Image (cartoon, rainbow over all chains, first blue to last red; front, side):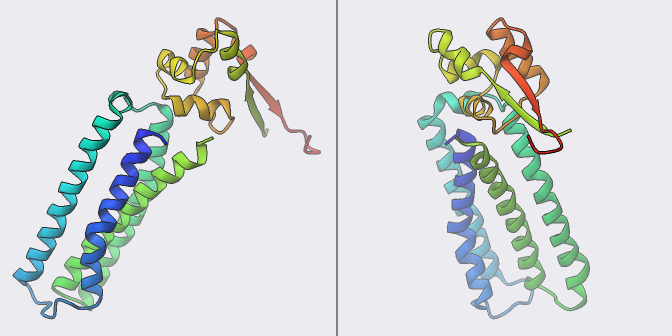
Length: 142
Length: 75
């Protein structure tokens, strides 16, 4: 498994471990008051985002130490091709999500529902991007 | 016109004192995984990279990479 694929797996796992529980709580309506500002919900989101950043940072540090040689190597043409394809697909996912959240949702929803939907679509786009990176490397792996 | 790109990289590496994929990758600016993908025919390199690989083996491009067109009857 290449270093870049490991990094993509790391991103996917950290998102699953942090934003997974957060959006599960949102889905089961754990936060009853959806009016802005709901500082408890804001605090929970903050904890989630900081946890994800910390896990990602620690994971990167570990990967860089464990695979020092590969980590130093610049992206080659295959890495760039996989990255470009993943980004272009994730871009359309993000655009679709933002149109839904920013243009359609304000007619029927308000407050934290819009905020959480926007955050969710960003995470979905990121998951799509990292998944496409993993799939790209899996496809060419021998 | 469809077809398949084949190559002799594995054989040529063997003939070059069993040069490793990592060594070849280092010489042409690719990772070991990318060389492995090219060898297995799962990734078609850019023209520039193909020339660089051929340059490492000091051979013309067509002796390293071959294009085999698929005819209308699928052969």
